[in-house]
Image 1: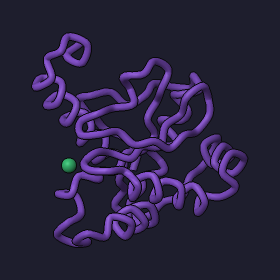
Image 2 (image 1 turned 120 degrees about the vertical axis):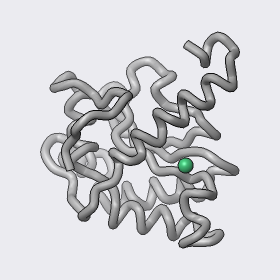
Image 3 (image 1 turned 135 degrees about the vertical axis):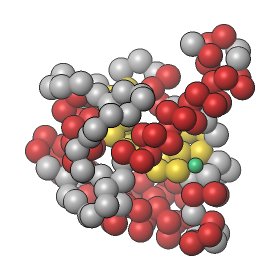
Image 4 (image 1 turned 45 degrees about the vertical axis):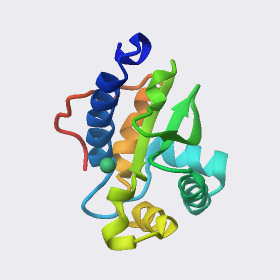
Length: 156
Ligand SMILES: [Fe+2]
């Protein structure tokens, strides 16, 4: 794997292809709400989707420089984290990403200028693909297979 071999250029390009493909899957054309086991996990771990969204936006807003904000499952639990540049949470064993949002400036600057918080809040409420996230969460707890690169048909 390029990440472990020190081939930074290869890693950056491969990981950004993966991250952006995952980002496209993380967005739905129409707003949807979490369902199933994921909805229960959000409720029990964060209290509400709104609270989790605030946590997600705060993580991305506080992230210095370019990168990604992630909702992940690790050991059956939900976590919000950010990675720098082309970084990916899947470099860590046992992590399944559920959603990713691009916080490189190119993702939001035309529409939102410097308002990264506005981008993240809008993204959370209007674009987050909870069908996809629920499928990923099911896979994280052993019920199905997670999304793989290259992408194929997924739930909308
Ligand atoms: Fe991007």
